[in-house]
Image (cartoon, rainbow, N blue to C red):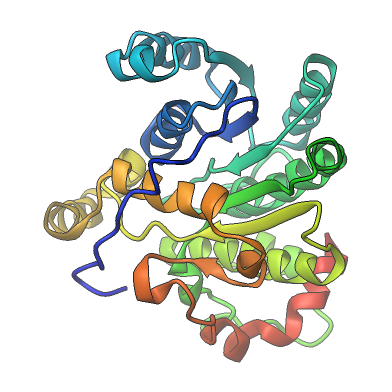
Length: 314
């Protein structure tokens, strides 16, 4: 990642999401909150905030509804808070069931919820926590909602959209050098049991899985119905690094103060991927300006031959 990040511009003011329903995960803070706010300003009709803490979600909902810009630009928006804890499969399944009972359509899924744990943790599924939250639960959520996304696309004659919040930190994966996968070894078991992987490498592992899943999915799923892509917001000034150890938090905060994008700017990148770019992004990660169309080469050098293995293991 360059020390000074390329400038970004807001999407066109002509975007109109009237009549559309969008789900945003991790919507109570940071990039997810800004995505939610911008979707409202672009006149989305129904916004579903899929969050782990519904009490906090209701507080954020009230704050959005009282925002003068929201009142001026989209006072008729419906905002609904629904529980979704991506640390476990059961919560994802409950969310999908509740959503299907409440809504008939889904135009846009923004899979934004994610974590980076300072120390290795295990989710209730037994999988490493970063892998569970950032990858496995997002795979389940995406696949479970695909039928409704397809149905909505058929009704509107326009592709529905799925956009994941990605990260170029996949380049830090432990599979590249530190703990390469052995022949015949299962990926999930490898990462569930491996020790000595740093925070950045574990986060990188989870984000690499996300990239490879989407690239493999693109081979099996035509974008006429649903366009599936991801974006890298770069370094953003959010609270995601607040849980870092003290010795890491200080230099990280200094770097954020010098070079980080604002959540608003990250929201611009997200909205560009979600509602502006087209089918060309299904095999590419959305990046700002001249970096947007650069093919991801490094992951192919370290793990590209294992893409099909990851797909089948899921």
